[in-house]
Image (cartoon, rainbow over all chains, first blue to last red; front, side, top):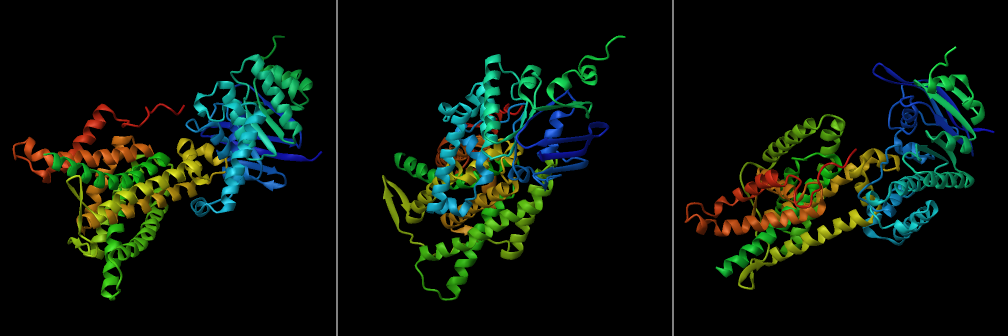
Amino acid sequence: MSALLEIRGIHKRFGGLHALNDVSLSINAGEIYGLIGPNGAGKTTLFNVLTGLYQPDEGAFTFNGKDLFRKKPYVVVESGIARTFQNIRLFANMTALENVMVGQHVRTRTGVIGAVLRHPKARAEEAGIKVRAQELLDYVGIGRRHDELARNLSYGDQRRLEIARALATKPTLLALDEPAAGMNPSETEGLKKLMEKVRADGVTILLIEHDVKLMMGLCDRIAVLDYGKKIAEGVPEAVKNDPRVIEAYLGVAPQ
Amino acid sequence: MVDIFIQQLLNGLIVGSIYALIALGYTMVYGIMQLINFAHGEIVMIGAMVTITCINVLLDAGVQLPGPLLLLAGLAMAIPVSMLLGFTIERVAYRPLRRAPRLAPLITAIGVSIVLQQAAMLIWGRNYRPFPSILPTEVHDFFGAAITDLQIAIIILAFVLMGGLFFLIEKTRLGRAMRATSQNPDVAGLMGVNINTVISMTFVIGSALGAVAGVMVAANYDQAHAYMGFMIGLKAFTAAVLGGIGNLWGAVIGGILLGIIESLGAGYLGDLTGGFLGSHYKDIFAFVVLIAVLIFRPSGLMGERVAERA
């Protein structure tokens, strides 16, 4: 199997805090790759440097053979990485449909002139954007709420809308930051089915999550971060029984 | 008494729709980058100046065209000049300060405004520039009030432009990108929106509207002046604050409301104060409104309470 995303030796420092310390991961096409670790371990920071929100200090990202180190967010999206946020960040005052339409921005072209002149091609593209947005809302299961402002959606639906918006960028890698946070068990179950569906449709998933049961049942491989360092990586069973992981979460067992 | 009421209402609507066009420029920029672009008033002034110069050049060259066409030719010159100016100001003065504390770009904006005023004075001199008498002065009767062709055209054009802007913002890809950027620039960037392009476009569109408004002011009052941008800019800014800065509908409603308040106020001020204050004190109304809004409803008529971002 070839690596879709190759993360090598990433460092990120915030003043004296070494948030990411020589982190290397390799994610294969088609897998669901989990990232766990105690709070403050650097999981979200890794997402942020990967997607161009923060500048990493050292290291390398190679995605699909392309260098993505220190690239602008829209370049990262264009090359096929989409993400969601731990604290939901929708466009609160836009409708669900419009949120997904913005997601397609990177894959569409009509500029100002086209929009003003309304030539047939521009109209066709605009209509296509709308149809595709509705399909994506249907896909994640909130198709009937398309006219609702994002801020008026229920919490679980907002999470789903974030996934729909991320999928609208046509990613090959979908990075989900705690998508199940705050969900009840039945919502989590629905989310798990959705992620399996997304993977079956050919999208690789990188997943941060605290729900261990969900992670064990869903991920092909898991990496564990602690204090900015990768302390374990492997299939879920092996990671679960790794003494370093147990130590990171529970402290050292008394002798 | 009734006659002057309708007349003042009409005058208020005319000047108010001009304020609204300018206020949209303030509010768009504020909505996207929380910057009050104090140089916007100067863009309005330069739009007016360029149009006057252009018309005079054509007249001197002996071009025989009907007045409205000459005016359109002047506009066709002024709009691109203002757009280019708006684009350049953002590139040179504001973009390097994008991540700076908010006070820095604000002071820069005031600086840019002064630079443009002085530059305009070097180019066009310090005297009032008369607007060439090329437009019909015939007056129509509107329920006892007087209105010229130009004033009718101002109202119609202002509303057409506002309609066009709303269409652009609500229904097009660029408009969606602008709204997304104003709500969350980082996330919009992650959706593939090029924030720099969106901000540039915001300045360019706002400046185009400003240029048109500048020509309207100059044509309606038959003159322009290097300092005119200051007062008109301040009033349009007041209109934007009155409507709720950052809100497009607010800018339109605030502009028209301010125009009407000012006009009615000026019309009756003499009567109300027993002749102590005359209509030339009309400017106080804009600022009384500004102070009242800031005290009683700082978020403006249409503005939301600022507590959205987590």
